Length: 153
Image (cartoon, rainbow, N blue to C red; front, side):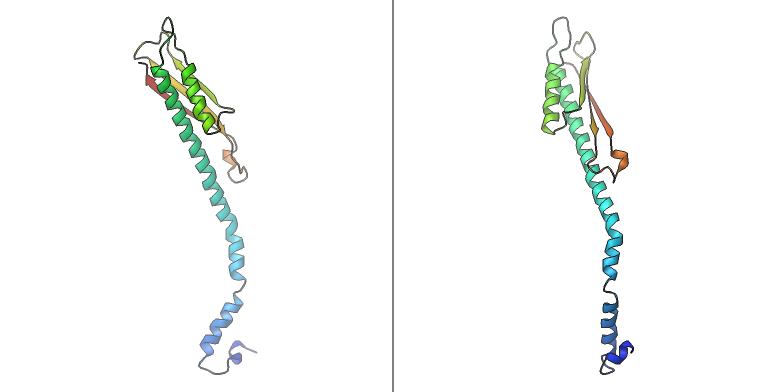
């Protein structure tokens, strides 16, 4: 029995054909969704992980800049020896607020003697580990490093 024989009159034959086509394509949308879903998930997780990495870069930039700023205005010790403790404490404060303190390496240096117009340099690095390693294997373990320098006052 063909599809048009189920239609009672010829006027509704077009409507009947459209209804049959809809019935014939019932599982097509499900199949298309199953085929496209892995690609959509890959794109979604890639966006999330790259956003997390970019957030960490911004936090490290802020920490290095703040460390250099605090170090540049901290008074030098006797004999123009630079004391980085206040700058390191400020870097630790920023990294702890972002939950990045564990495993972070940081250093604040100034050439000896640390006189006005000397360069104060702050280096901060953290290892970024992805939460979904099977999506972006190149980001499984990535070291992010930021440096900032300012003039000692």
